[in-house]
Image 1 (cartoon, protein in one colour):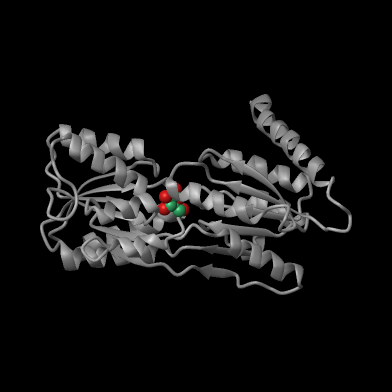
Image 2 (cartoon, protein in one colour):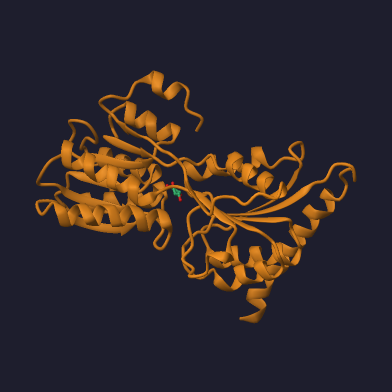
Length: 323
Ligand code: AHR
């Protein structure tokens, strides 16, 4: 067991050492801030846009050396890599936590080493907020409440819902699930046919909806907690000879409003898509610049987001989207 746990850490430290080695080649007149970023994974289009935003921002031209790590949706990988960042004495740790719980110990190590920790995207569940410098991300519960209100106004009663959840224990899953579950309590004619995690991936979303349709389940709504699971659901619905979206057999509700997600919304295969904004790179850059200037950032910052109804979405609205 011990050997198993030590290997990823050793690998991480070796990788970090390489990255730091090249950073030290920068001219001494140009201070370089070392930022260690622990990313959740590469599970979705949203995540790819988020990674790109961070990598485009934390460049050497902008005064940074970025040490990027993809945790492949595993919290133990994130804990190991954050511990590695502490041992390497990076200037800032940026963490997009896969799930909310289990962070106190490693964040205490970062605090003891005086390394600021900036949380992005998802939140953590700790009693002591001094364990992180600040957080910037989405109000996932609000996103879900907006979707549920739209369903109430536009889909009405007698809904037979398949709920595709994201990674269990992640803020995005917790907030979006709470919103739908509150909607189910308030609308007794809505029936929850199935509630399963698709881990935010297209493949799992497709697998779940395929199995339900094959077993003859009567469903008329898929509530997918992200675009990629909605893509999988639509593929399964169409493969079963049914139609998805506006005026179809099964309505599809989605979150993220990525380019591909909005394209399917424009094609009316997704009825309603609530934005989750992934462009956190410039936001974290601004936080770091403020900290470097001796200013104290807001503890919690919610980004503003919009929602898109397929019946009012136009190509022009898609043209100026950045992700
Ligand atoms: O935490 C944000 C969520 O994570 C996005 O909705 C989802 O697509 C991603 O994987």
